[in-house]
Length: 194
Figure 1 (cartoon, rainbow, N blue to C red):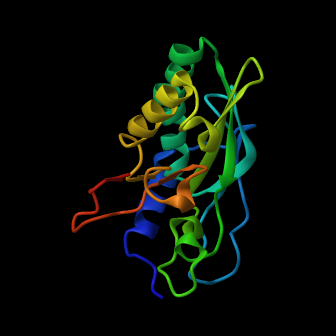
Figure 2 (cartoon, rainbow, N blue to C red):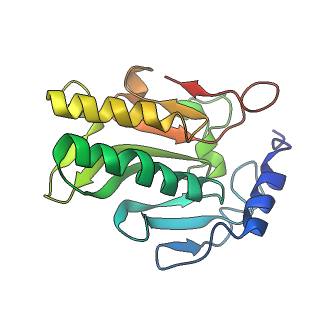
């Protein structure tokens, strides 16, 4: 299995741009695994977004381009939605998966998942400042406020990530939002939002 030709240049350009800097919440990691089809050239561990205000539990292992997107998404989509629907500040994200060297949906013989390139994150819940967690699994068909919040966050995610999959996609995504920056289509710019 050969690496997609866009991955290395995209990662190097992100690193060279200086958009991702080491902080208390974003730290460089050693390479993920050895030489294999999986991994990222210069992965990071992200433990919080929005200057530390929104904790990622557990910390996510991600490639450079994912970090600013998660930050922008948290600041421009999730935090405003939490304030609007619950009158609460967003305190954290429940991370169900980030880097994982595996095929799509963990099905043997399937294409390699974006998780295998540290180019994806699965979010299972949103923690509010008052201690409540809005779970994707329970809230998708939960109270009107939970449903509106989760659908707003899902739809808003499509502006920041090239792949957004949620409970309406299939049963494998019933408990989380899958967010990644895969290239789709001939020019790599197509978005998949389901």
